[in-house]
Length: 207
Image (tube, rainbow, N blue to C red):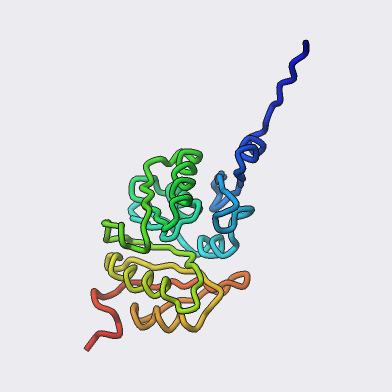
């Protein structure tokens, strides 16, 4: 009797479980991400996320929040560059949280804190130096409004908010109303917004 042993590649092993393995070099670091078809951009890393990461410089003293993390690209990239102890990721979807935790193990950054949360509802941490979000699109901008306003509150003075979207005017106006100013990068059809917190109060509330 003959037995045939099937030697599976790492990608095949994930595919047999109904999952997808993406390997990508980001900021000179080779990273691996397990994804599933029910998560955002499961077959390749979203170009908007890559555009946003291209304008961010992480430093060892940063405290980073990946808000709406999906399968964890932004937070895990940050953790590989600055260490996992001050990196936090959150997502409203339980599946995204589970997969992100798996991906922290896959990339040897298990110290990253991954939180299931609708926006900031379950996030107790504050004094972030960087908050990043590839914001989900909603016709009434309700999620983006929450992320911008509450993100401002959770940043330390001098902290920065980065957001990426394909829409410009609403985000520009809203971020200016809260932060007092914004720098906008146009990259590969996306708009990346960078705003710095320079006061403890919203810009529109100053007297």
